[in-house]
Amino acid sequence: MKRRRFLQNALLGLSGLIVGCRGGGGAGDVGGPPVSDNALAEGQPLRPLAILRNQNAAPGQFSASLAAAPASEMLRAAPATPMCLYNRSYPSPLIELTEGQHAAIRIDNGLPQDTTVHWHGLPVPPSQDGNPMDPVPAGASRVYEFDLPAGSAGTYWYHPHPHLNTAEQVARGLAGPLIVRAGDDPLVHIPEITLFITGVRLDANAEISADNAIDWTVGRQNELLLVNGGHRPIHTVRPGATQRWRILNATASRHFRLALEGHELTLVGTDGGLLAAPIGGLTEILVAPAQRVEIVVSVNPTPNARYRLQALQYETDYLGLGTYADVGHWQPTRRRAPTRLSYPSHCARSPIWGWPAPASVSSSAKSPVSARAAAQRSPS
Ligand SMILES: [Cu+2]
Image (cartoon, rainbow, N blue to C red; front, side, top):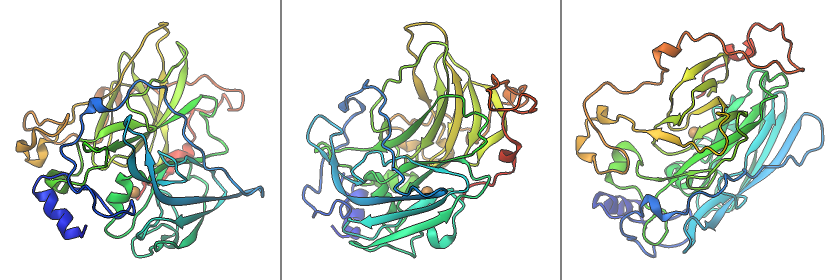
């Protein structure tokens, strides 16, 4: 399908397919309306993420390969959904790096179109950041190389950034989390999980739907949300346990006001790594598209309880698009200033949360979080 045809279909309100990334033609141009939120099986255990293993045994070196290629995934019981994946993994594998390491990551482009790998937020040289003017053609390979400087610890993600086809390739599954760890992480003693939130919109054929007119205006909104590739998964935790959650919003355009039923949250990190001091007592945290947060959750000690991690309604009427009230869960209510990335004011001056001091961290430290994090840069 030519791009112009694709756009025409979208403007007509049809659910045309996104083609190109899957390597096929335009079969099944119109798949009907998107399937509802109930079409996916839910309640499976939270999946552990695949790990991109380091193939280099030399100290301070990380070497690995990503193969981008068409693949399919059973998002519904049947049929399979044509996607594009790195190493046939959905979500894409978790890359774990360490400050001071030199990374060399090869991309083999098995897609029928250009791609790149963009290291979202990482302080890498422009020549290594997968920008659209530096494509890896179909069938070609290249190696991205960069150093992880001191102070770069944090939660990032990676995804293609080719000219014209970025949205399509990401929508089809090419996106994964990337963590840079610090040698002196003050929270290393807290068990952690990574929650990689993606969105897919499927048509009646279980194919990923193309953008429609609303998407072209405000970005894709009515997607089915997946956490680590599962729909409304269940994460089982020992009552009273404390965990660190790295949460990545890898949806195209959804804002999440995340709240955990019956719990207050403690924000310890954002796109730039750990905060200078944790911010406790939060009832919700706004996570914008592409943004990352790290929170610490102390689970209520009540046994056999169940709590939902919810995305509360997000005000979008600042866009002036009140006619779009039929889009998914997202419903303008009243005119109001846009929600900004901020925390409830009553929490802004919360006293610093006192972590149980681990044996490896000096108890004389004034803040449990390294001052190093305070000076970290904003991501690009
Ligand atoms: Cu990005």
